[in-house]
Structure formats: structure tokens, C-alpha cells
Image 1: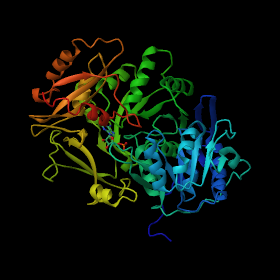
Image 2: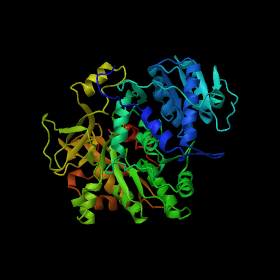
Image 3: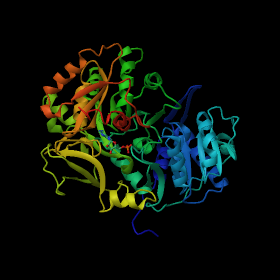
Image 4: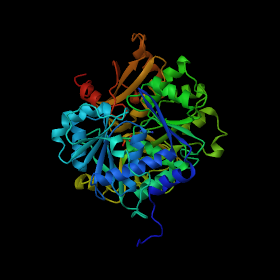
Length: 541
Ligand code: AMP
């Protein structure tokens, strides 16, 4: 039937949780209280949901959108759709209305599963959703709220009374699309990426390895990365496969909510972007909650400042740096020290640990310089990172031109400018569009940002390329000071600090203090807004 031996199906991750880990827990925080059940209960409900999808008349290969927080119900969707040969499109709830309406229409979602508190957002756009035939509201109370949505169902009512077993297909062609996600688009409209059963299973196995996320049944993982953003970095699948306890932060989690969950559920591991860990650090410092169960924090999505990693380590919580993107399910690099590097001094260890890391098994990568040749492995020469492998997307969904531009030669051109050292550790200098080209030479904004954030008075900082009449572009630093810090004299201090580390032509000509740094929908610094505001800062100077 298949031209390969045994297809890789997400179904087998689900069956493993059912057969081996039926007593392990899945916990969700709701403002109303904590919901908990076991993988045994979870399996029964995935089956009930599969029956409900049949009743809705959903055919193989059709798509359903989720507009939801990280909860156990979202986890049920993660499995019930792919395991019955349908496709789950996880819609980003934080992007502008124009953008998420575009993604739902482009994906042609037939139904939309919506968390109760997000219903008003969907009510406002329902007339513009061209393919959605019905809405399924997921409410913590299990009762349908008052709503102007048409063709609306209650999630719990759909499941109630359904059989807790389901005749899943014996095999699904592993190249079948299982899930879909759109890029969080820093330019233009989001682009769709499809994830296959094969890609998800191989990615799940790879991230579970000891030198990646080191997944184990003994773990309790707090899933902070939104499930609408690149499959929450693959954590829901990996946890289910290994039987780890999953803890979902639910709707609108605050840093205090995360801290309480870590304490109450004895969380051992978690993963997320630096801005989340920056906010949680304040909670750790307050000393109100018990963080003693936490063994490791995975940080990625953007580069963490060294000061952040050090601060966590001072509290006995090691941070591990990782890198990836929507086009790669997402994990590509993880930075753990090789055994013989552990003998190095602390300073030398940080040299490697601050880098984005080593390529995951089964992925191929090359760093291509401006000349079109691969750069030297000297940790200095810069080039664009190109990738291929079983979980690197083949293209953008129904975007021929953009696919040709980015994937045309069989390699995915990441748009990230990196160096690679003799040990194979890759370091991101910048996004191609964020690089600063001053007088024909490149300046890395990321390195400058990290150095500025090491200043004790600085909370957050970005460095942007501002147009310059003489040098074409010059770096401009935008910084947010910590509460109560007086900006007087700080510009000079920051510049002096940078001058000890970087050549003079790298130094930002100016530092502007701003109230806050805008963030993207997934919590990364959004330089676009600052570029708009300060892009001409040096013109006429
Ligand atoms: P997204 O598809 O929204 O996850 O964004 C992917 C992009 O985020 C990558 O192409 C990088 O530019 C950036 N990124 C991801 N992880 C890191 C990291 N650890 N350090 C620096 N940039 C990162």
C-alpha cells in the first residue's frame, strides 16, 4: 500500500500515552480554577471529539481552525484532527485582525474552535470569514455563552455521550498534512506552512533527545509558548509521546500565574521567549513563590541577553538556548556544551552557551556568504543560514512566488545571518533585514543589544539601522530603563561600556530612551515600529 515500510503517524504518539501513561496528568489553569485529568481521560475525549468531527460532516483533508489559549481542549484538537486525517490550523490570536482573517480565509477553515473569552473578537469579524460554516465555543463552564455567532455549538455538548473509543485509520500516508500554522510576519501578510505527520513525528523524536529538550516521563513541563505559535515548539507532542505531565497556563496568563503553577504543580521544565523569562525574573526575585522544582528553562525565539541567563543561574535555574522558526516545526539548533567544553572557564563556556547552538540530527545546514560560497568555520565570517531536512517546510501554502524566492533551490533560505565556529556552534548575528550596513561593513545589532542589556539600569534594548547621510546606515540604540532609574548620564555610561567591547565604528551614535519596546504577537522585540519612528533619526545630522 505504501512505498515505504511503516508510516510515521501522530496517532502512535497518542496510543503510547493511552497504553503506557494513562495515569499521568494534564493540568490547565483557568481563572475559575485548575482543571486536571489523566492521559487516560484525555484519550477518551480525543475519541469523543473525533466522533463529533464526523457528525459535523468534516471530510478527510479538510481544515479546522483553533482560536485558543494553551489548554487541555486545545491539546485534544492537536490530536483529534490529525489522527482522523483532517488538518488543524492553529490561528494566531495576537496578530492584527486583518492578518488573522487573512489566515483563516487562506487556509479555508470550515469550522473554528474558539475559547469563550475570545468569542467577542470573532463576533466582530464573522461576516468576513469566507469559508467558516460553524463555530464551536470552548467554555470552562461547559455552557454556551450569549453570542451573536451564527451556527454555534458548545464543545462539551458536542462531546457529551459520544463513544470513548474511535476506529482511527490503521495507517495514514505519512506525507499527509496534519497541522498548519502561519508565520508571525514581521513584513507583509503571514505566510502559511504545512506540517506533515512524518515531519511532526521525526521532530518530536529529535527534540526529545538528551542534547535537545531531554524529554522524559519524569518531567513536568509548563507549556508557555503559545500553542498557536509553531506547535508550542513541539512540546505537546513530545510530552504526550514520553508521558510527561503537561501544565497549561490557560487564558491570559500573568507572570504571577506562571510562578504559582511552577510552585503548585512542581514544574521541572519550561520553554519560552526571553521577554517571558524577563518578566518571570521579577517574580523569582520577590521570593514569594517556591521555584525549587525547576531544573531547566529552554529559551529561544530571540536571543536572550547574557544578563538574563546569569540571573537565572544565580537562582539555581540553568537556561539552555535554542533556535528555530515557523518554517521548521520549529527547532533547528540547541546550545548545550559538548563534554570536553565543560572543562573550560565560565567565560569560555558562555562563549558557546550564548550561541544558538548545534544543528539537530537529520538536518543539513550551510552558511552561505555574499559570494555564494560557504563561509569559513571560524566563528567570524558571516553568511545566510540555509537549511534542509525532514522537518523543514517545502514552501509557503499557495504562495508560488514567495516559495520560489525562499525555497527555490531546494534549500530553505532562513534570512538569518550567522557565523559557524570550528565546533559547529552557530550564532545569529541578525535577520538579513535587521543587519546594519555602515560604510559597507556589517554591524550586528544582536551583539550590541545584549551588551546594552547588561547595563544594570537597562531593562530592554534594541539597536536599529537608522539612515545616515554619510555612512548609509548607522546603529541607533533604543533602550527602556528600569523603574526609578534616572536617564541623566546613562547615555555616556552605556557608550563607554560598549567602547570597551566593540570597535569604535560599531558604537551607536546615539541612545534614545523610550517608554517601552513594542513586541510582536509572540513576544519578540518588534523593530519594525521603532524603525518607522526613528529610521531617519540621523538624517540631517
Ligand atoms: P518565528 O517563525 O516567528 O518563530 O521566527 C523565527 C525567527 O526568529 C528566526 O528566523 C530568527 O530570526 C528568530 N529567532 C528564533 N530563535 C532565535 C534565537 N534563539 N536567537 C535569535 N533569533 C532567533
